[in-house]
Image (cartoon, rainbow, N blue to C red; front, side, top):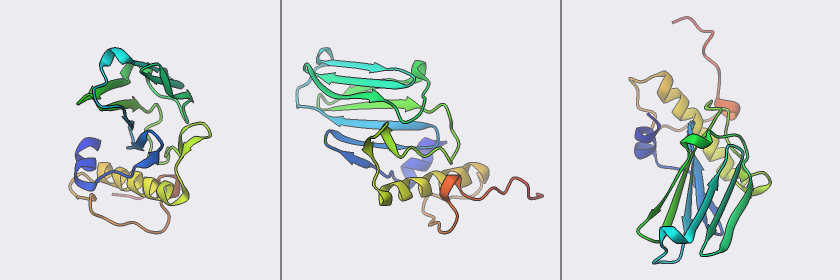
Length: 157
């Protein structure tokens, strides 16, 4: 579901010195630019439920405690075209209100505007899931969207 929503609506990336990261309700995506010609043998990647570490050609790219917990047995990394590492982490908490404000605790933080756009995107993704007959991929949202947006669950259908 998220993949199709993201394909139609785009992503809100948080730029970093090594690339960028972005998120959906279910996943966190990390894209790391590496020197052209990098081989898989030159990549050392540890993906824990609460920590992450990436080394390329013996150089530490990042290491630290993740902003929130993930399911480590579902995390993956790939090397694409020998120049881009793509890491996919599955969030443990998959609610729209669980918008990561940084990739690692205190590091690679989204600025206020990016954080706002990420939360808007997660809220629209939640609306899409709750209303599968509608297309929210091009929608704009204003008002109360912080924390996943308004809760309509108590309304009668």
